[in-house]
Length: 415
Figure (cartoon, rainbow, N blue to C red):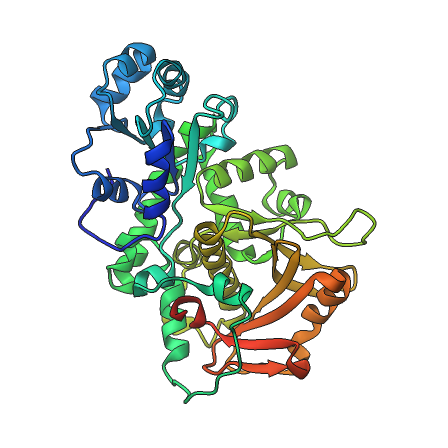
């Protein structure tokens, strides 16, 4: 189990509690050590737990899945269920006999819905809840109401005194990332934890989701993606650069996504006739992991501002993904880029309306920074509801006659 010693209130706790009240199987999925078992334990400390990472349980479950499930208590938590995927079919049989809500709580450090042959096993019987790395809102104990504020049109110009420490705060948040254990350590100790984490995931967990012999090439790919985070994904270029066959690169990308190490943000397009670039953008899910892969420290902020700009974009995208997940599952996130090079880091679609969000690692914003938002507004047409530029300054102010807003990054966790 994840250690319950480091506690951060998680906004997905209510979703987990609600799902257990009316659904026979609930799967809580997310990266290893992100706090899944801790949240499950806090929600139901008396619930029996069987950790399939432990040899007795894992070995028994693998040898006789049906017998193992039949011997379990009526209500149970199974940790790291991706270790024995054969259990899902046995659980399906058990649930078809007794559909009492909350019977099985499964946690997994791999995305079960992306694993071959497993996504259909519990269709209609299981609700999946994703637990992301800690958001800055959760670290601060804040509600994380950015999207509800945005949709309500309640973001307005707001001048306030500059905070000279804001850039220092931002880079520190990037470097530490969102894993609870890393967040509780000094930056140097957090980097050590990140390195150990990557070693464990790549040398052990990979084998749960794919048959891969060349872990070294997989590690090289992840390191390369850290350099490319926040950039368009071109598999052909990746293949040529690393000297790895394209089919292998495709396979490795799927593995890294199944393990919640990377995320591919799809391209926005209104219809097939639009001449838009359809390549996804690649993002390393945790900015702290990416910073460790790149060997970056807080002292590198000024000298390596370009790469920090990409890390900042990936961090913001991850904050938005998590907040969208707990706000409303109908929120759709993508990115925009047209053939003329105009781009927007994040496009938010919700109930027929579209917003654009840009991310800048700078303490000032000018009209020139609205080029991508203007192109998106033209492409979207009447459904365009507004645009934001997140930056490292401290005041919210209007641009382009009030059409767009420059918004301090801190609004992601202050609202």
